[in-house]
Image 1 (cartoon, helix red, strand yellow):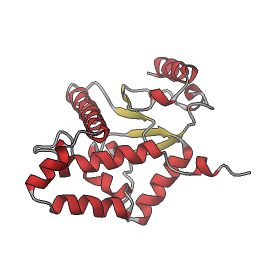
Image 2 (cartoon, one colour):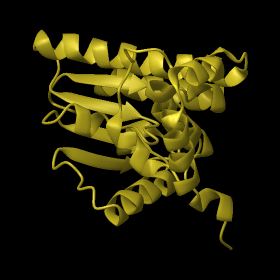
Image 3 (cartoon, one colour):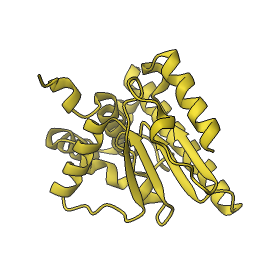
Image 4 (cartoon, one colour):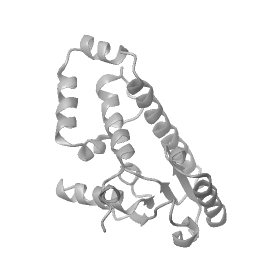
Length: 197
């Protein structure tokens, strides 16, 4: 029996991608975080919505931005956490402290493109990874040679069983996922990181 839900990409990853794409369109410049590749993951209706918003005058975009809603708070949280992680990674790279990035629950993350040629390992649910790869292939976006996918269902698999020993310092990001996991899955993942990092 096929579980249709498990074959779909993560809906939270889709929402985060949309909010990252929405940020430079509606928020006052300069953007906190820029992710030009993320639009490739959006369905056509969301891309058309962003194009229509971008065509509005600055006054109307300001009115859209000022509407008090959970959308604005969520967008702020998502772009700030992405910017924080990017800044921390840039500082670690500049200091020569890291030779690989490990992105846990990667979803529709684009670090591998934004930080090339740094080797990146994306750890996520197999269905989300499959959808991501197929979408990029359909849109003619090549995968970086330095990107590796590691399929893991955090609730059903132990990260330590599939994660290799890096052999070099790695930078780990794990953004916006822990509140969906059980305490056992979180503890197991942190334990695996402690033993492999």
